[in-house]
Image 1 (tube, one colour):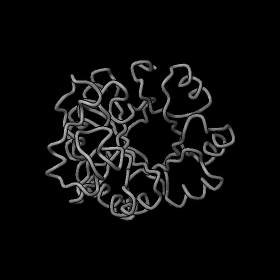
Image 2: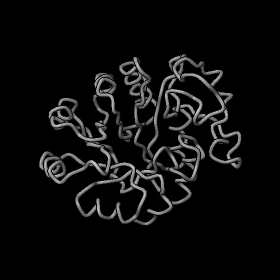
Image 3: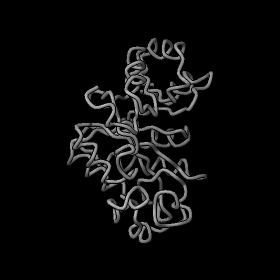
Length: 247
């Protein structure tokens, strides 16, 4: 299967969950901070509400990062719109809203940010989330400048591929399984994303031989990032973008 690629040069550093540790995760404030610091690429998570709408949030439940409670997939859009998604980080971010995927895409376009959209399905909603996210991407990103789309769920990625075969896909594994090449090839995957401490040189060599780019998370030290780049890693995801400026 042909592997679609993003219509932009792959950056060295992606701001993890929008703005890394410098902003409430998965918020528009994070996007603004990343852009203000000169970064041009962000990563964020997308999950469906009870109404089937895509929102930016990492956890299946609301408690850790918002003023709400309960499961995201059981919560209506009208409730999500009223939540504070900033105070948990710092009172300076009080009132920061949980963003819809539509709002995040508009902000990325306005700020000139490239994106890695991670499909983050709640349990039992992998295929539906993949389909909805893929449809939204096609509608929200004009032309061929689509974001890179990743997920730990191969079911979600397969659904996204069926809906929009032109999207560049990435398989996410903490530690790539022994058959990672076959599984990524079956999806027509563009890149392999894995934990930095689980990457060995054999995986890198095999990826390079197949024309697969390798991206690593979560890299929060400059020396570690530079070491990974020397080994042949294409890009890293970081919470400490302040430490990786100008890399």
